[in-house]
Image (spheres, rainbow, N blue to C red):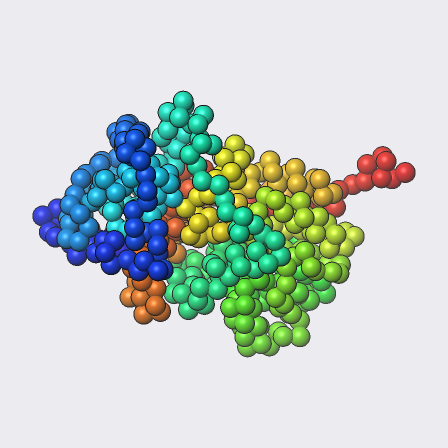
Length: 438
């Protein structure tokens, strides 16, 4: 957790690599192998890039008892990035790029008075960080995604469980009372904690309205979460089949549904979207396509079309990124894909339009709420940091807590910089063309 103190006061900060569990975090506990030349190039590129950005760079001592920079005062809001171990920082980046940048934070080798601020600056200038000649050599130094992370039927279940089966108790510590793990839609910005659950319900209700969910509607939900959408659909009189690959989420959602007296209307199954049979008036999927993987987007949209009854509607909530950045990310093993969402890829709006059209679906509604996701992530991050002791009591060590803080801040920065967006989309069966009608 970042602590702000006067610059003369020592902080018992992260104790450094020596305290890292090498079995649990092997690539954080040890420095990677990197040639002196590669490290020197990384140092020069990084130092030149950071010098051109609205950031302060400070060199501190090694992790252990170092001052954390005091926050900016007055009108100067320039965030400060403090390098406790510059040699390790540049060596990790030289060896592993942005994976190394993230692992260096996990190891306590750098810190900041404003994590979201630093990451927002970096995200806003991401195309300027590496000189153009070196960008052309990108394929020679980036790591490619491991084959084990492919979203085959077995792989998809493993990937989902590595994130969503961490602990139900962990997620309840920082999510709002609805236990919704996706962007809320607030009535007004900036958001307040008191608005959170109502904003999550507003998000769900808009999706249910897009899909036309009402009494007697046969609803398929792809991605149960902890059950809130299924509960609200059932409260409208719908019959719901909700599927998930998370055993922890299924058990939790089933308990909530039974406690609400809606077990006759809602069925929750451990099942892959590719294995579902039937016909549904409404198909709803909230921020699940990001876990599908580009290799399987065609299968995903084909399943949506196959499962949709005549006259039915699909309502999706999806995070998106620009198309060229998506293509670069798809070819790269990133810090997020290594530690947070293995096998995942955020699609672009172009990819969503292309893949859905190829499957015989037409987009009839498309609205973005990126600023609302930034606020959602801010509230999650603040809750998580406030619950740091409770997270530790659940058995999550200081490396995990720094990793999770970085994940939430990194995601928030993506939306603050408008590199990321989140969209609610309605799809219907495409009208048949001339050949189809014949």
